[in-house]
Image 1 (cartoon, one colour):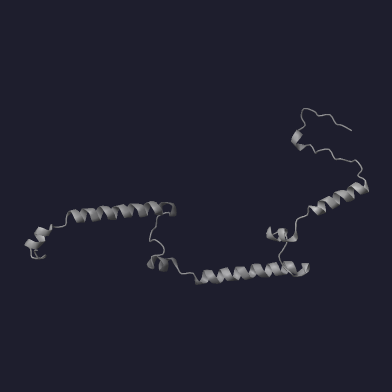
Image 2 (cartoon, helix red, strand yellow):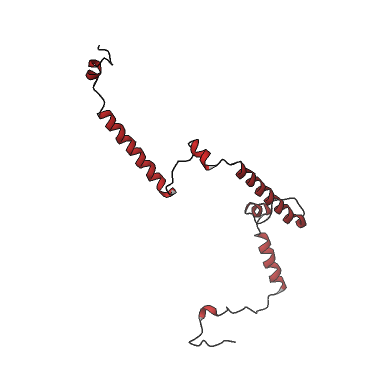
Length: 142
């Protein structure tokens, strides 16, 4: 039975035709056997986290998973409680003492590095010559 398409019918909302042909029991069994032969190994399903990797009874698996999740949550909370404050990390030179946005901190470090280099070059250029230091008695002559 075929329905005619009208111009206002949206083709994306139509359901595909259902195959109502009869499948013989032998074909059905062969199809099932074929699919069972291609079934993935339980270890593959465990590796893909489809099956739980546990020896617990199925009725206890959900409880065991909740317990494991709670243990992980407790462990994270303990770790966060022991975490040092930001000020301590700045004092220990682990974190930079910067109020700039994290995206700009790299550029800020580069700018500070170049400013230090310029300052050192300027101070080296203004340094007295060895002859002047000998004249002032700071250095001994050769």
